[in-house]
Length: 198
Image (cartoon, rainbow, N blue to C red; front, side, top):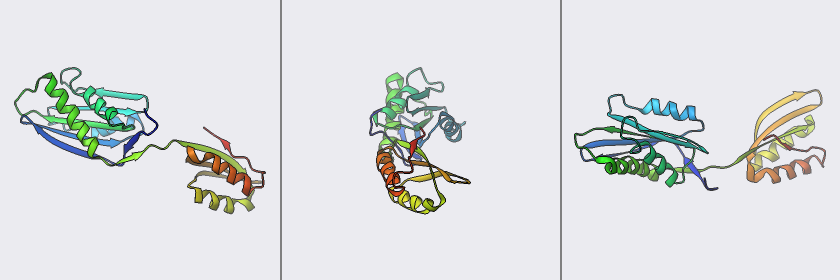
């Protein structure tokens, strides 16, 4: 996947009628295969002829033709996801058969095209690589550290208090790690070192 991969901002859908069959593509952002399969179960219509799907999450991907001839539905949906530079997403294309056979090429175009158009219309978000840092500070430094890190967009994931101070676990965009470490060093006059946890 390219460094500028995107995911979806939220669920979206797109419907098309192709030679009397109705095709409905429904897509959503997902972080795990379990979330992807839960979405497939949630939006699949048991009254429909086929519920074909694909997902990609980093290097992990799967697709399913749900009874359509092999390679005519799930793989074209996956190719639509990849072709649009989308990651961490699942797409389900549901078909209600209208009585006209489309042939293998027609099925590939119908499933892939409906999925691609759904993704093309969807609002996207860039995928930002995140990092985790850990540090220990004295109680007196906590308020200033919190405030200065918040200005940078650093999220405090966990705080553990002990007799000598506080251990913090921070989550931040990878691109801000050096700035955050420098800021922590400045605030503590070199006494606190933020170390990577990932």
